[in-house]
Image 1: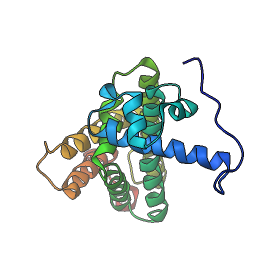
Image 2: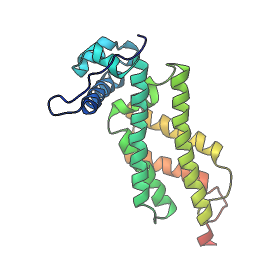
Image 3: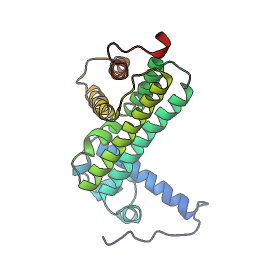
Length: 221
């Protein structure tokens, strides 16, 4: 397919062409969440099957996307965007909380959002792996955003005297890998614990990283 087919323009049924286009795109993404995130998975899904699940035609698919990889890319960004929005909203509300409580709010918001639908876990941590260099670059770029968020929180804690001063980039990268791995394993039923237990363990890991043994917060000196 050399390019997208031209979509119809003008109003129809009281809706503009842009509104109809947005609705079609939403239906394809919802269908992809079902097929990529559950069964049969991205690699076993065809354009015809996705279109049928969305209740649309393959012609309409090519009006919105070039390939199924484009759909997976869009869905991966969306799933990460939902989680990031949940975290930033929670952190804004927890602005005045002490370090441990604030970190707990951060991970509870992230964990609850990303595990609210097992299909999101699969999109974020499984289906995106090894598809293409383009999607691997996107996956690492989104991971880098999470690393930056952790570093920003750590540096703010340092400025308040709540955390030991250091370069947190390497530690944050390792920590994000732990977060993703633990939440994936918990969602898959491989970890016998409640979600609150998982969040509590992540909080202990991060606080241990921010406050190494022997270091004392400014307020306690």
